[in-house]
Length: 461
Length: 53
Image (cartoon, rainbow over all chains, first blue to last red; front, top):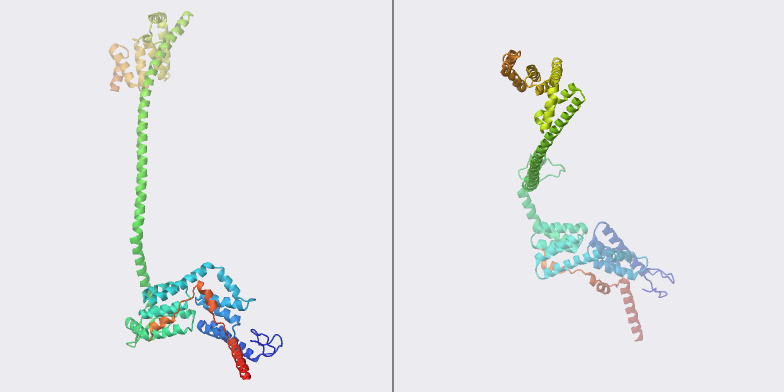
């Protein structure tokens, strides 16, 4: 509108910027627009979005340049799921007031989140699809689509209302009440939602109320911690122990839970345990098999080693006998050397150690006999005396050695035989003792040691 | 009693994103000021035409 005095255009003001005259009509228009804007603002504060939108639209009908009213109207549209309508208002707002307009921020926020914008568009498409289904009288499919819409956009008022209407149509009154009440949580004074609820109360309210009374038989009094339930029909009251009921319910719940665990979890646990056990058994079987093969291998090795040992032992025996023969010859040579040097007693002592039957050659035997013939008596006396001294001193082992040597030189020496038998007896070698005692008994029946030997033999038996 | 067919007809398809441009251009932005201006113009026009006669 232009100033009636100077014809200067007056936009969103009632005071002319040129002549500074106040335009009364313009002032009334702007005041009326602002009054409706304030009304809209108050309604929004109590979540009356429909009323607020009506007031803001009226405000804009008075003054299209009321940017605050237009931006607020866009926010209401955005809140109720009408994103395109919201964007339209904000774009117009920015077109009418380019500088210092918060609508620029709103538009940028939507442009910077294309995913959300796309999701909102999908929601709108589903809503429109539901309307198409309704045109084709396909109510069930429309309900399915509208359910998706209210899940995707929980503030989409039109979707709630249409869904509620369809629930009423299909006689799903409880569901209809639920969605309509939910729509009123977003928009408290939405006349359409309130009208549908009113109709719903007329159609289904009484039925629901009557049914619940008949089913329950009791109605709970308004007590936050009820322990007394009033029975309306009979006009009496009954004590009702809710604590006991809760406890019973908990016990039943625990039993059901335990049964579910037993039926579902225990078999799988047992199966797992059995598999584990089988795996362990297989592992141990493999180990036992390995050990068995190892044992058989070691047994074979032991047998081989035994055979090898026996072979070596026989070889060793051969070498030992050869060594004995060698040492026998050496002893004979030593005895010969001492004999040549004139040490007859020494020669005899060495000769006593020589085992004449192991001498191979005839020459060695001749030398042995010759030296023995020259030193025999002296050597036997010396060895016998040493043996006797050892016997008297209790050294029976040494005595046994000396008497054996004596008998090697003089096999029929009665005293030596007796003392050798007695030495063996003292050394607990009863077998050898018996042999030599028996020789005394057999070979010398009238000898000095006959009675003693006979008695000794009798004791041994 | 609700007339379901009539009620369902009241629900109009929501605008999709690609329809936003059309919605903006088709938006009726005339306010009271525009109407008064038109009325004043019309009044002036009628006055000038009556003066000619």
